[in-house]
Length: 95
Image (tube, rainbow, N blue to C red; front, top):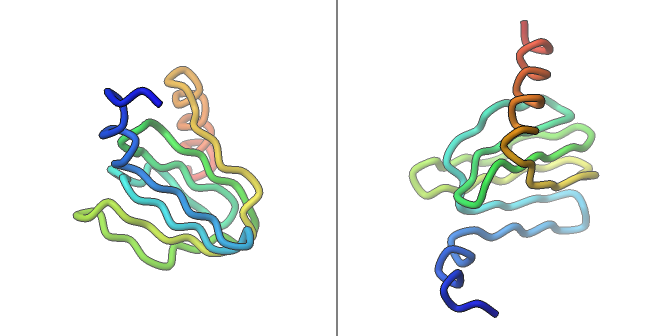
């Protein structure tokens, strides 16, 4: 393990329980959300979550924590260029 990055890595945890409960620490803000997709800005990059019947159960921006329930099918970090594509997709959806 690269110990220079250890402190950065310890700033974020992702815990998925039975694909139904997702706990994430190290979040900065919620970019967008609906019952099928969440786009979350985290300390380690943009995190895309996809699933069915997704609901935000708890959000504490001050502590950087979120809990999401529902059937989780995708958890993926997206690159900066993909961020623009996903953000524009969400802008179209929420117009």
